[in-house]
Image 1 (cartoon, one colour):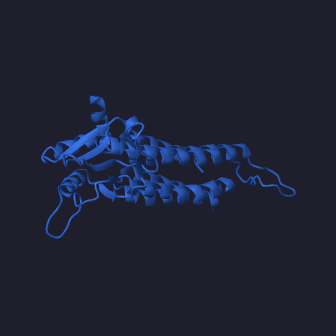
Image 2: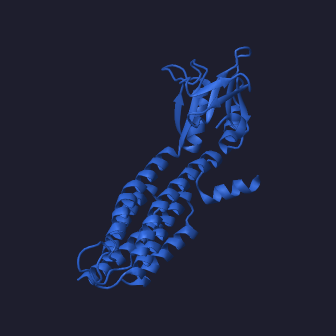
Image 3: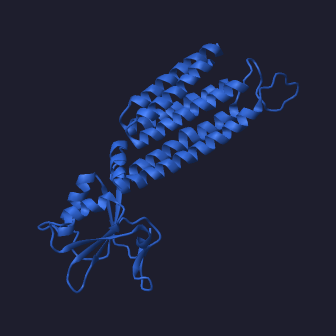
Length: 111
Length: 188
């Protein structure tokens, strides 16, 4: 595992977030960024050749279980944030008639 | 051996991420995001975190594509409640109602999927407040007939840009009138 390659995934997600023209596409890019951040955190707590943090007799070199517990919470909350964002996309379509950022920002500026 | 597998999976992850950012079709991206979740789950196992991998497989590659599919297919749905109960929005083999032609032009302009219902359970009239309350579902448009003048009333939300377009289209039909409500009064 190379942390730099994982950080590249985060950067690709941020690039897509800043350049996408469709609102649903932006939500996809948030998902990519989130997966990259989770991999970075797990890589921090990992030991090369360590054993998984499940109790058994005679375990040595247990990896840190704290980042893993935090990252399970991140996955669950990320899925609810995705559902909320997509619900707002449906509301935006019924309000503006489009889910393109250009149209929404132009019509929102008039009011 | 595990080191080589980890590098190969990371490069595959970067390729899928670039493909998601570059692709234009949302249906293709749903399939790509599922494979993205599966590759990340195998990378979690390599990082000695099998519990996170279980959660990622269950949520990332099963529930999230389901949410995307449902929301993309429901996005263009426009719910119309027909309370007039006559051939205003029906199409028979020899003639088309005015409302049918109006709603067809409107849905072709925005590529909407019309969902026309005449279930009286969806909305009920509240005589105290003199307005129609829709509690169960998100009705976008209500069609009513004025018994005295014979005009058809199309009721919708004031904030929607779609209703402005519908009002513009309805100006060609003399017996159709578009009424717009503020969001709170409409009973969303």
